[in-house]
Structure formats: C-alpha cells, structure tokens
Length: 119
Image (cartoon, rainbow, N blue to C red):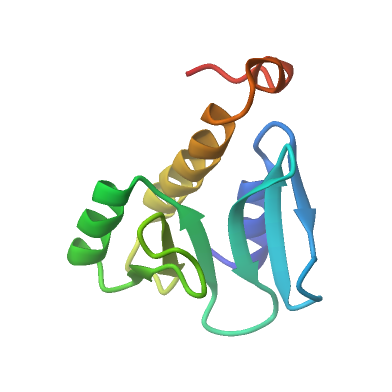
C-alpha cells in the first residue's frame, strides 16, 4: 500500500473528510468532526494511527512488530501502524474500518443515520 492508496482508503468511508490541521505534513481523516485516522504525508516510513478497542490494540501490538502504541496519542485507544509490507492490505483496511466504526458508533443517532451507518 502506498500513501495515495492509504489516503483513498481512509477517504472512501461515508462522511470522511481529509484535513491538515497540524500542517501539510500530516493528513487527518475525520467523520462528523471526529478523528479516526492520522497519517504522515511525504515522509518515510509510511504510517497511520488508528483508533482501536483497548484489548484488541494490545493483541495487535503483541502479534505485529509494525503495530505500536499511538504516536503522540492515548496508547490505550490508538495504534500506529508502520506500512512496511508486513501487514496485509486487507488487515490494514479492516483496522481503518474498525477505527471509523468506533468513532461513528459514539456519534448521536441522528448523525449515524445521516451517514447511513449500520452497526
């Protein structure tokens, strides 16, 4: 997965928006104003930080050296994934979807319905 593919995948979710609140070197993906993914732009190695259920976050870190506690984030709830080929594109897509779902699930019902999100 390259940077453009990663950004396209994050942006493909309903209501997802890409912003640059921390400067042009950091892409932030939000849904309903809430962050679900953060990725560096133009820097190597390619990484993405994603929200994750705390127990799963620990399991993923233990099983994959490319997954660490969220960089500059609450490490209980966020993982940073280094995209180095050791994680399959499908697994990465699943982690992005899980992060998006965790954020949307916490939104008010009206916002979830507007996104046509199903639990």
